[in-house]
Amino acid sequence: MSSPEPLRHLIIPGALLPLPDDQPRPALPPLPHLDALLRRMKPVGAIVCDDETPSDPAELATARALGLPSEPGRIPWAALETGTIGTPCAWLMPCHWQLGMDHVLLTDPVHLQLGEDQSRALLSTAEPLLREDGIATRYLMPNAWLAQGEVFRALSTWSMTRATGRRLTPALLASTPVEKDAALLRRLQSELQMLFYTHPVNEARESAGQLPINALWIKGAGVLDEPHPPRADVLVESRLVLAEQAQTGATLEQATAAHHEAWKALDADTGARLLAALQAGQDVRLTLCGPRQALELAPAPQSWASRISSFSARRRRWANF
Image (cartoon, rainbow, N blue to C red; front, top):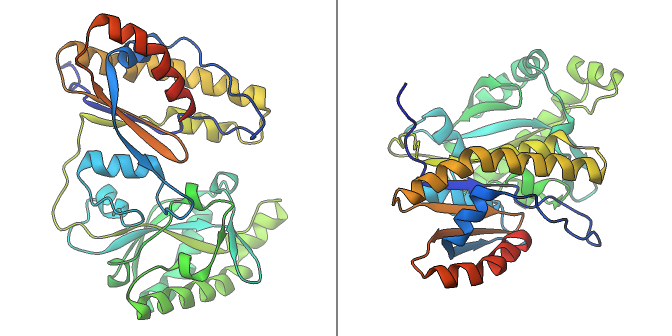
């Protein structure tokens, strides 16, 4: 078996475990490979997201690393992930909106546990309505349907991680410079809510104590004009995010333990691969992503003395960015 292609850019979302404001951040466990990388690297760039940025730092860092359009809210993830070229498309994500008088709150999708049968049944109901307005849909997975149509070409969409729990206005839910497209999407959302309201799937979900699916979240809209081949040398390391999702509802102690175990597994695997590439002379990158910032690091040509003296400061910055 041939050895994997050298890893040259490791992107780590979820580097900071969400904690209450008054909770001290616990020290990370020993991470020998990542510590060795930090001793040999320096910050070369940062992405900062404020409350009005529709994309999260990890999405923006990944888009830049892959050479995608990286305007916040305009990254064509659906086109990239499905290999769709030349046709505007987006992901439609079945979701639950908590509806207010003048705003919407998006419920964390991790709570929905939507299965394939329920998802396909909802899509079969929504598809004729969407088709009437020039939107073609295709089932790909329970939590995401591929939608194609001109309405998605200039659409700006919010990351679900950024939007969850936030007050969202109609303008944010359909942000596009093409007013007729914004009006179409607002109308569709209203009609879909009525379609889903008494749907047998939702009757079954509510009888089982589950949240109903009452809306579709639009994500990753845009168009790719040319193919973007897969990049085996760029890796988005998902272990920390998956560990956090798996601990929904857990105690702080349990969540912290799971977070630390994920860090140790990451360090032993992809951390070791990136360190090996650095030691082989590769021009590697390490990007650490929190909820508001992403910090990119690159090899730092400097003396051993300055590496050692700056190491503790870098690890503190990493733990608190």
